[in-house]
Amino acid sequence: MLVLFSKEDKILFNDEQLAIVNSPSFISDVLDGMKDWVRVIDRNDNILYMNKPMKQALNKYSYNLKCYEYLGRTSPCENCISRRAVFEGHSEQKQETIMDRTFSVMSSPVINSKGEITAVVEVLRDVTEVEMLKKELIRKNRKLQDELEVAKKLQNRLLPHSWKHPKVDFYLFYEPCEKLGGDFFDIYTIDEEHIGFYISDVSGHGVPASMLTVFVKSILDKNCLSPSEVLWKLYKEFNINNFDKNLYVSIFHGVLNVNTSKLTYSNAGLNTSPIILGNGKIEYLRASGIPISNWVDKPEYFDRTAVLSRGESLFMFTDGIVEIKNKNGILYGEEKMLEILQDHNIDIKDKLESIYKNAFIFNTASQEINMNDDITMAIITMK
Image (cartoon, rainbow, N blue to C red; front, side, top):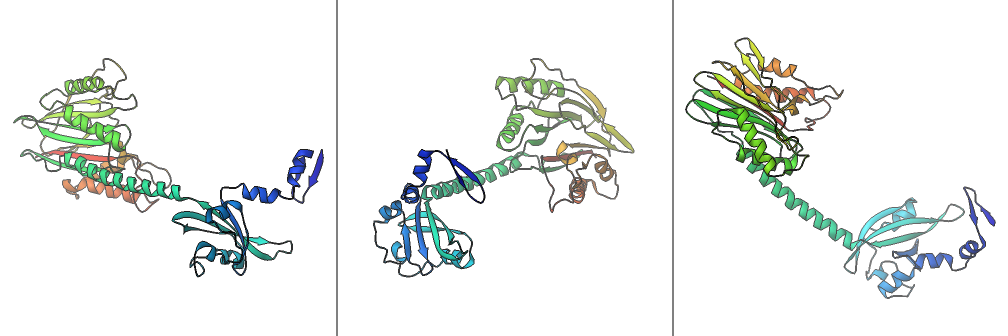
């Protein structure tokens, strides 16, 4: 075994390895074996060396040409980085088009034992296919973004922004954390006495979650007066369609008799409890039930009742708003929402926007709310 020492490290070679390293052609063999083009240029743009792949590709062997002439040009490149590498003493990188091909060019100074910059070495790597793929990805991404924007508009149109009723006021706030959301709210007229509504939160975000909101809206029975029966039917339809186990829907469903003020409701796993407020009352509508999923064969849902008297409001929300955090990691929570909801100086139609703005002020870590989840809030008020 022979031992070679350098200032920085110690490398052990056997005889065979040493013979390879000490071969007079070792360096040129290495450079000629590279797929990349390599050339060395002096301070006056003269070519001192080119490796074999570059010579063969350009089909030129003369060293009497300037570096730019070798590339078929009559003057130095406008964005020449080799001169900067020589005079500033650090590596520079750019892209260059040569013979309709795109190259990534890295120019690095050649420094002798005295610390003097004597030349520059250029390594040119053909990145044409990579750049074509990048452009294709950008094109497809733009197309996808355009399609998502259309889908966002379509999903937004499914929300009941313009729904009105002579005996009920209704206000909705909806803000997905991505272009498409997994939250949804719907309200509808069943008959002259009853209105139905639900607020849901689908697992995940984006396209899969948004598609599931469309499924719920299209399948949900809007004629039934029993919310628990509606949820049970929805559960069966969900399982008939064999959705993935990672997908599920948490949903609170209610039916309100606008003549008697009787509210019947049932819950399928929504982790936020709607609140009845007004006339000095704060009543949480708590109910348990498994989310719409394929986790069990026969889930149980139960109807519960409450009274929504005239002048009182039913406030519903998903956990996106209460889980907003400030810069210290503290959750926004329900207490601040309740303060706004009970503030008589804020008109009922402005309360949802006020809650959102208040969360914006609370979230002082950035210029906009750091949303990790969709935000949905709705208020139904008996006139």
